[in-house]
Length: 557
Image 1 (spheres, helix red, strand yellow):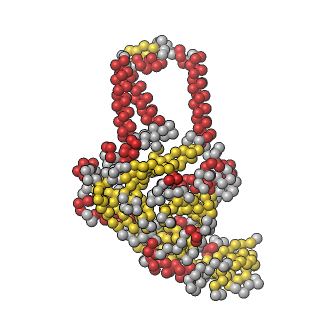
Image 2: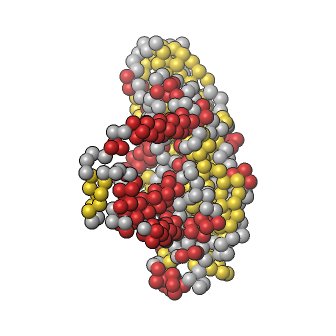
């Protein structure tokens, strides 16, 4: 019997070592992969021992005197006594009570119901000023390359080098970073298959792709020494295996590819932990940098990450925390019942390069309406610094539809917007692509009024058209400077009519006691078509050389 148990243990040990080598679970009680590993060991040992003992092992586990084995079968002479024994019931109740107590404790200490305020404070958000934080940048620095375009440029570039195409592909990372103060996407090459790994492993991966997101310049950067550690490597040089063997207890979140200011390639692996209770408050606690050439590794806490690293947090992590911040502003019950001051992020997001850091941004909208934004939130992906901007306006997908509609006859598809500053006006920048995924036109859309859309086949032409429309709408004066002074008035409508100007419906409103004619774009208020003489309106407007343009129109009861 000892031989049977020993053989089971040896085989289980070998199988477990293989499982660990390929699955790479973290030796951490908070990790699901750890418990999967333990379950594999226990079940594997039981099954193997049962097979080798011909069923006698299971019979001993049951410990019934009325159990006999006939070949490989377990046979009960009568109903097992242990099922009806008092001792068994006591043990079963005790074990169940312990399980319920442990599970209840974990739930109570980790659940959002009991810890809403802790979840809400996972992200510290400050109100900030858009024009102070987001400066107007030259057209030459506006990133026009999104991820899809970057992949096309990368594939085209490697296709120019015949000897590389047969051996390597471009990996799908295309990490957005700030490289020497320029928005850049970088991605390493990878071995085309395991055969190519065997034939090229001694030299390693010789190139990575670097794409300037503003100029679209694409470069295959030739390394003086090839990269020996990556996800496409095998055995001990496989990136995650290399890191796991040194950091067996760390729980890994995301992997990104970056280069330092000297162009040296590194892998950045984020480590996470649960910061609320036992399994609540998922957050990044540090990173591990891996020199892609030498394999040298360094662990940094989130508070000591080097400046050149851009991607510590992922967009998914920070936007989840942004939703906690907006949802639990007044506690858990408020988020379900009255929902006072509860907000949420909009569906999509994009990235901004500000002060040598990458920030993820998305809109903020009320939970009871998703037709427009009430502001924006920006989160630094290196430090997790978060800022909000109270800017009412179009939700991103509405702006995309507006840009597509401006040249709808061409059937172009809009990319997700980038938030930019044009003449101190929060604006969306959007690229418009044809069916083949090629950028054909560019567009600027006003955040506050998505009817103001400048579209052209060139970047400069789109900006020129956009500035012209801003001027016509009263946002800019004759010199192209932003009009900041706004006035307000409230009175009854004495006359109202509409006209189509540059493809937009505008309403011309006269108020009792006012000698001005107020021009209101349909985008300001969907109720404008239903306003009649005698209705009372509150109008906020700008007065530019006698051209009075409304910036806000509300009905007054």
